[in-house]
Length: 180
Ligand code: IMP
Image (cartoon, rainbow, N blue to C red; front, side, top):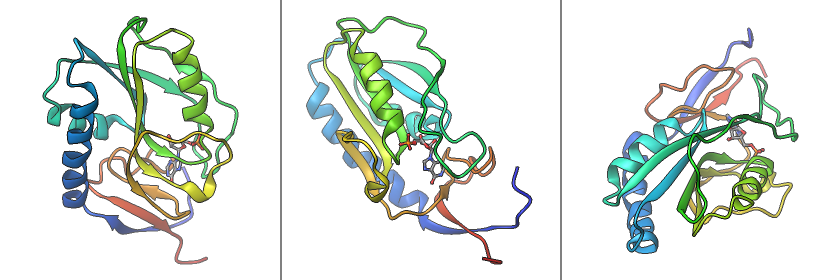
């Protein structure tokens, strides 16, 4: 945990997030309306709040599974090397899959995970990310749906952490160091 004091400035309100999730779910319904059972795969840990709100807005038969990939550790920089720390419990072969990510930053995580899941031969696979930082991209990956595109700021809240803290904030805020 960083000892350096920081403050959090609200960037996206809880109300704006809820409104955007409703819009995203309309698009997801449209795409998956004929599916027998959609497997919603949350990438731990940052997506746990987003996935909880998302599935409750989805009027589709869904299963939820989780996968954990390594990313930032406790720092503010991506490690770029992606390792699977926890794999899915279930099989996805022939099944429709929605991968849920909190933030697409460099894109290494989403690229690695989608490549891995595609090798398991799912049916239709789509990706959704709550936040996108396009200016940080180092790969050619893009999520099918994005909640909000944001500038190159370090953000926390709504499931997203800084050194494991602030996940419980109901909004997305940006981290600022007053001594900087
Ligand atoms: P990528 O592989 O660089 O796209 O990183 C994706 C992961 O890095 C996300 O799933 C987050 O866990 C983490 N991450 C990226 N940006 C931020 C941020 O601003 N705050 C907290 N975590 C972040």
